[in-house]
View 1 (cartoon, rainbow, N blue to C red):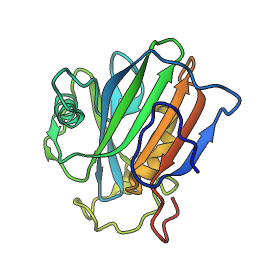
View 2: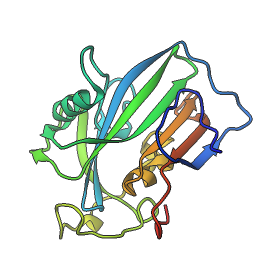
View 3: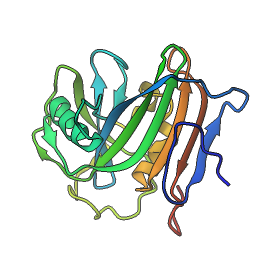
View 4: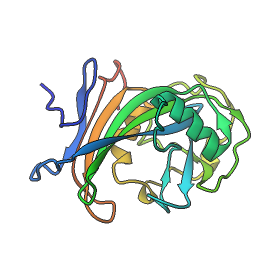
Length: 212
């Protein structure tokens, strides 16, 4: 039986894909704040990321998202944030949930992660984020069918690869599940300097023949 960390809920079968920091206890938290994070993935070959220009996480590449405002659903917030930060709209669907706790904060972050495989509009830099396309390297997505989404024929190999060294430390653990179109959940507890103290990530079982 999979040992799910506190703070995580999920439906359906789940298998562990990564864990660490077993010598530590999960950090206690007093309240939970709701956030979103959205990714546009084209042709199973490239992903749109944004460089955070100010505020929390400045200098790191990430998806597009932010706080869920009062009266909003996470889905509504994800659409709004993507348009505000990158100037585009997309048919987003939730593909995972992440739960983060930092030892300097009393509130945990429950992050609804959304994906889309097409978009409308012109990608535009905002005051908060600088969007850029990155290629998805083989170790994050074993390619299966490059015809599954729009933008067929685009030379994603000419793009820089996803800059994991300039992203949150947990991203490399759950991104393969996202790119493999497997619903995922995870929790990471952070200390100083973006360093994970304890973490666990799970995903829906891979389809027969998948390697992620």
